[in-house]
Length: 60
Image (tube, rainbow, N blue to C red; front, side):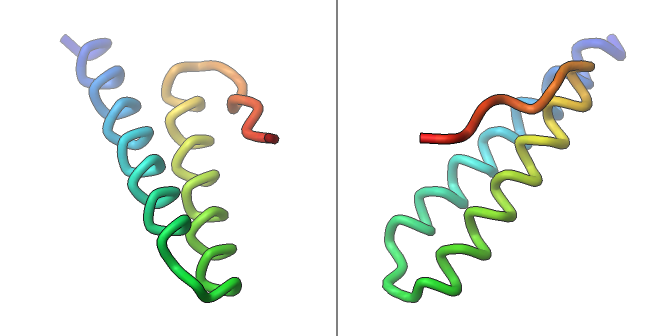
């Protein structure tokens, strides 16, 4: 039960990161885009920590 909750939380964090990246692609303001991408990276890092692993390589 707890493992399922942790996995679900990690998935939700990754979904939020994906939405933030989508918003970043849609904005024309570079500062806002950068902030959204940084926030998405933080969500990915939190998800990776919940999974007990290292954050994924997001370069590229």
